[in-house]
Image (cartoon, rainbow, N blue to C red; front, side, top):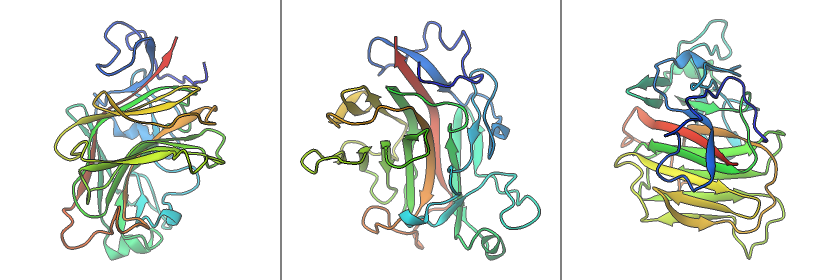
Length: 283
């Protein structure tokens, strides 16, 4: 099994009733966060393990706290982050209530922006990079996305080796286009005749409630589904290495058509609400 297990699993998790309604037959649970306990302290920069059933999450990308190449305007923070100053700024984008993790994005006051690289907004990112990764499986998130210009929530996978590509985008959404999502794979050498991803328009309203977004990744194919219905398949691919999980709420992008920057109409704060994240593997 190509997964790191550092306190993530308990016998209860692997017992009866663990499988969700949309999980294909033959899979067993290998990772789960139901966000049942309000322990946001387990989301931090160096998180690598947590209590059984509630894994710890790293609160930043491997290389940085934002991605300028994508035109993002936020910095990913946690309550202990200091920026370029000497003391913790106390910015907390994470909260857990009633079994739901909320990732909050909001504008930064000028003094805070000055010690946060000039970024205009704060937001949150969770990754399992330091604690869990897996090759192949069924990867699922149940979530409600924020509405409004500038919001770019996503659930995706990156290589444990720290190289890019590959990437699997289980779902990307835009607050400015709530009736469309993007799914797909990014890999080197992929033929233009076989696109790795697809825009799905009119399939779901990402803001009207909680929906289940998933990808079944096998050695032959990656099948992307929403609420149990497959909408796109990658076909043959070269993605055969362990990958870890990421969920984040970016603000703004380099593509003004897909994710335009916030403006006066943007309803602050933006909240990316996640009911659960689960991973399964055959066997």
